[in-house]
Image (tube, rainbow, N blue to C red):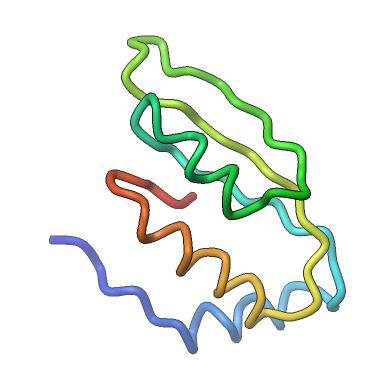
Length: 88
C-alpha cells in the first residue's frame, strides 16, 4: 500500500532544509516515451535523461531555481499527472 503524500509535512521539511530561493533538483522516473511530458513541465530548464538498463523507463533530472516550498510542491503536483511517473 502506497503511503499518502502529506503536503504540509513535505513543505515543513523543505523549509527546514534550506533557504529560498534555492536551486532544487527534481528527479523522476517515467515509462520510456513519456520523458517529453516531464520536459513540458520544465520548458526553460535543461533535463538530463538516463534510460534504464531494460529500456522500459527513463530517469530524468532537472535543476530549477525555485522561490518557495510551495513552488516545489506545484512542480511535483504537475508531474503527478503523468501516467506511471515515480517522483524521487
